Image (cartoon, rainbow, N blue to C red; front, top):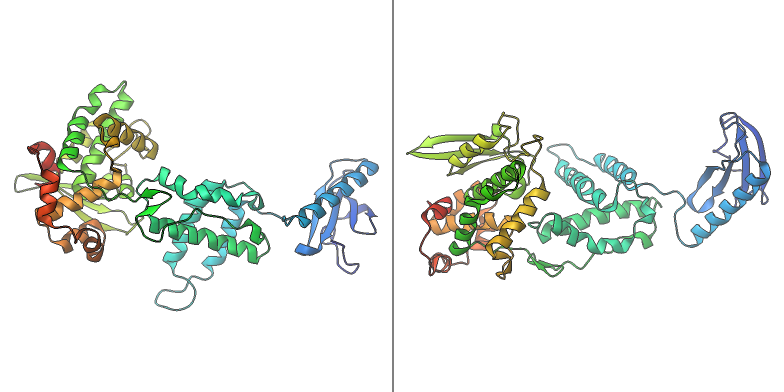
Length: 424
């Protein structure tokens, strides 16, 4: 860490040094400037990282300054021997720098080779700002992030978003690894800092001991849910909890009727919803917003009367208001409320102990299953769900419709009110 005698001291150039002293054969300099007053500062050349280290010693006593500067120098050498970085960025600073560098690589529209697409850059920003930074903390120094802490990354993502799929987590791991590779290339970090993730299964069904649930509700299970939510709000302790239960009830019923994804449901605003009359029925046309997984698309659904009902108890029904909203604040209903009440519903109906992993994603799966059972054309169904025909064929095409019908309705007398949500 010895400074070359010919290397200019950038820490003091133009700083109007009023007094300086060299220590340890010139390895350390303590100095004052007109801006620091009588407070001493130190600087030393960090050869390993080709930069000057500068720090205020917060003392006006020269003897104490000499001692503090020497102690700081010894500590710096120890950190370097241990492979630690002297100049460490915060996680937020690193992410901002990385995204700015990657933005330079975005190729123009119409060009198909070289660089990255705008969509790829958008993915990088989403993963790093929505998931990576909340996981590690924006202000933490990147060299202080425990590489082994990432063994809990998949588990925490699943806890926050039960419907997240393994392929999504695999992509997120790749993005985070790319960020760290960038940091290592620029000597912000060493190989020892690279994150260590929990093993992710190669198939898309399992990770960290969990299955990506593709369980549909059977008719019996759906009856139990429908019966409970019908009177759910009546037993609420206060008005706020009552409206929360009403919103979550209709969130569930509309999800099962339209196949909308969890994120698409939360982002619905009244300007995106058109309820209309057709053949004596209240149907609905929904324009899914563009800032969702598959972008903007129109979705057709029945049970438009559910939106009419929401308008009656919601305090926020302007075109720019959220459909599923905190009635007191006007903000989106939070994931915390949605997950809390879902867990409460699973406990109340006894479905948590049934051996199936029923999540909000199961509502979308139930919609697809019952639409196929009803005989809806797979192309129209794929377009409505914002997925591909191949995806539906891969995940549902192997199921015999008649067997599916028998399995889902075996031993049940159909609850017409409940089933009309799904198959009428």
